[in-house]
Length: 349
Image 1 (cartoon, rainbow, N blue to C red):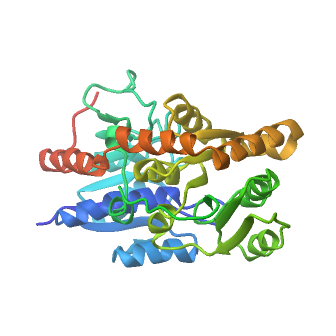
Image 2: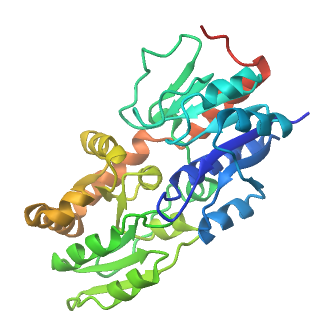
């Protein structure tokens, strides 16, 4: 029988969509290998996220918060493995699933999402290293070698058409822009005075109205569109992007789209720092600080002007990303997960 894999993740207007999109990316390659995939959680009523699950014919089943109830549901569904991509699950969720003989892959971002008992852990961030506190039986998949990307990203890797005119900038803060970053960042980009064509992707009508009304210079233009299925196709037509330090920034790195990155939540600080350290993106700082500090806001504006005005900087960033990220991470994750499914849950003290 085909392995049955559950993806335990949630999306929402304030939660964002990154965990669900990352899980669906892994689900794509597992489905290609004959697995049956089900999403255990919620799409949060976000139309774009609902559409992403529907495109892949992945059923969405509401998941209980209680670990034992979740294990009951997973057993009833006949799941062989569950991927936990969630920061807010009770700490004994993984143990409850493993007690039923269900293999657990726990996704983490540094310390965020850690603490679950699991057969395998995944931390796809640039700075990630194995956690010495985990049991020896836990297989740890760490670093960019295991970065997970969707089909929609991988098929546009290596395609960066040139275009004439001012640099084109994509501004995207996830499927929901949960922290209203676009209304902060776009005025800084326009206010930098750099010639630029800004393309903003946002689901929020009030944000769209505000940004379209921004006064612009003679060599500037701002357009706004709603969330798109082929974000990667749009991204590779742009000279650079501005994004949060979530899952989308790794897609931009994989595509070779030079980027400026904003930390919109505390759990993204380490991601932004790692991106800067490896020369993968230009850091703009924390969103909360940019909002509250005139000097931080001014510095972010200078960084954006620098990225818009410096073709060599953009070229350096564009070349660095694909050189470090080969796009095969989810294949490696699927290999490890299915090997463990075949062997059964690991014994742990």
